[in-house]
Length: 490
Image (tube, rainbow, N blue to C red; front, side):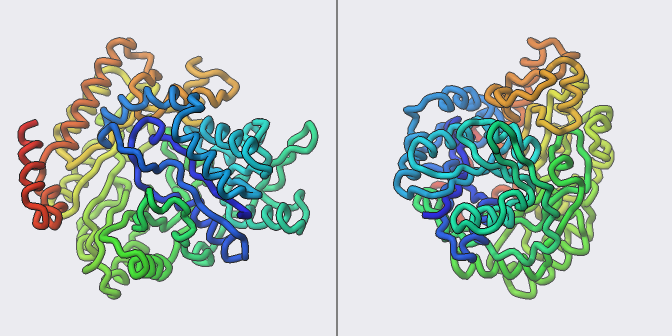
């Protein structure tokens, strides 16, 4: 094999079963495949072992304690599986997606790859984009791809496999040259995402563990907003590039015909921020008759919600929407630069609850400026809003964000970035502690209280949840009755 792309394990190391497809790697691998490269995608986040935890906020938080232990256990089945896959395919290039949170896992995979076969190791994704030279300092990593990886990886593959081109002229690349690091000029953003080929899901080599059903799609890249806790701005620069409605619907239709399935979801944080493009998509989705075959879900900013838009989403068989609220304190919403207020959230949530869409809300606690009354306000706000489900995160300072700098200035983080921070810090870790205006013991009590509320909210029976599972319950009435009785018992 020429190139094996690997999506690293993270929640799998905690004992949580995740089913997802690495869309970013899929796009890069597909472009290389269409240019006559022998490539494969290995999703190491997904395995055959059963999950020891439910995908609920508190259980995910409890599971985080397993991460560091399994990260450093060379005998763990995940690392043995990765070694076996590399041995089997013996690629000339190993390309690995690297997030800040998974950087330690990436370094371990790079070491396994180098010890297993003679190969070049390339990392790409958010972490190398933010810290390219730091990414290359690891002895087993040869190249770091900064920014969008499709064309950089294509040119690098030509150089490494076919001895074509000039390494120093490949834009968006960092590599070692003796004792120095060379960083080439940045590559311009891809202006026409429609020019990229549709992702070839058949390139996934561990289909037996992930299933053949496609479930995710990306409609845009970038975000125009500037939330203080989010790394999107330093990565994308607040520039958003959208795919056309035709491109999206063509890809969805092709995937449905080839792989089947019943539903999918958009991964974009701001899918419906451009109302015109969202409406174009929905109308075309309906014109093709896909709304009768597939349901879907999306994420949105609170500001983008309107009654007219919700009606459009409903007609196109959108069944769920997730909104980033983050806090029940107007003071904290300002420090997070969310550009929303509690009153606006109430107004928009009311509109969603009047629709047929299931409502999922994101909240975060523990940011540097929070006080106890802010966390309590968030607790009460969740109870007031009564969403169908909640994702509760504990604040994690990601490099490049405004709040990361605040943590450094307040002496909570070293001035020099230390990647080992994320072995003990994660966005579902109860032990994260960055709001020093709350005594640590009291903060831990508040986290437990919040996690309990989040889990009970997710487990609560709602009419929309029953409606979403109606097809399954009609086919499996006994299982449906047991499930409802179980939840009522809780």
